[in-house]
Length: 303
Image (cartoon, rainbow, N blue to C red; front, side):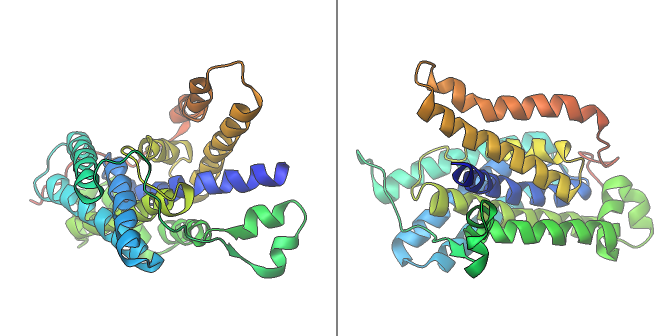
């Protein structure tokens, strides 16, 4: 029972963690990417279509990353080059992608009475490590995307805090005018951050269709993009803090399913809301202690 709960916690945390790591990089550059939900949704739909017609998982992941990257590239044009309000632009893209994926699904597959399913991305057990009591099946018998999320947590955390590129990125988020005076191309740094986040958001969306459900429904992301935004604040703009917050959300999701199966005298909608209520509670408790990049959300115009 506990092994299953831990395995579900990691599985539920993976797509949120991937998207939140991308958002961490974007916000360190000074941009608020409200469009994570749309990027994840585009990745989820693109992954399903690619795997359905090609049968190849690698193809599905690549197409998902490319679709979300295109969404973030459009966002970059709006918020970096044209200096549109970042919140408005991201919200508009979320609505646009939600409409496009819904219409495209009906055009490609028609309206059927049953859900369309595709082959799942199989777990990748790590040999003898899976036989470790309690933790083995939970930690070492997961999807390759779960291992990727953990690896990226270490890489992104180190790169932001310990490398010259990370210092340049943080300079763009703290004081872009001073960064530009030192010869840093603020536009290029923010573009790179948004494209990187697009790839991770697309992979997070692909996880939902290729690992979590093996199908696609309209709005399959279920607000996970907005949760990823909250996790960056809860994690205090630190990669490992974000990973811990993602695991907390994943545990709440796993607990939700357990409660639905064991407690039958309460409306199931109450359990569905549990992870989001917990996220809001933790966000309310932690947000006052967090220090966002100084120029976060502020457009930069080259003089």
